[in-house]
Image (cartoon, rainbow, N blue to C red; front, side):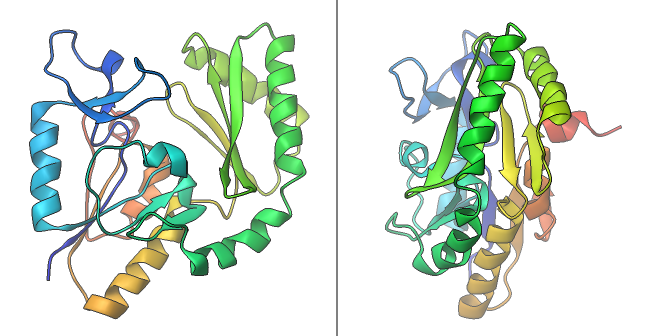
Length: 244
């Protein structure tokens, strides 16, 4: 039986062009919303993931929304965890009905609160003189969490915003995640670890105990990586920078 690899995508298997040397060979990995906003692999990243796809059962565990995940070019065949764990996709790319029926009643209680929080976050940013954009990540028609980015890619601006939001918003029942130009506010139950635990439960029930590898770049990945037998992360990432 093949080992199982649970892996984050962005900044783990590939990255945007601006995070690569200008003269690096760039192999397209994911289409962006615009023609100049895609993600790319180094040749060694390309070789590694295609080796893994041949030798392991590879299941992405990503914060990407479902539409964004489907813009990834890699030929995953065993489903995925998306939307920070709010969605599990079946191998044919459909929302897994059993997980959706588990998560949907919990999301229902946040459908008024999340849009209000996003509006407050953007208004707070405007008051502070920050240039921001933001949106809600959703599963079908249900908002799962909110994302705010700086239009100038300023982590300092996002830190300033988060400090202000902690003073003005009731964040009980939420956790925050910030990595680079990305600030997310998420209900506590929307997390990669919970969905990955369900993937592991199903995989073990079907195939028995197999070696499990976890890969990620962000502290938000550590939850599911700790469920694995082995864990790995690229250098110069958030996880690596927190090591002594």
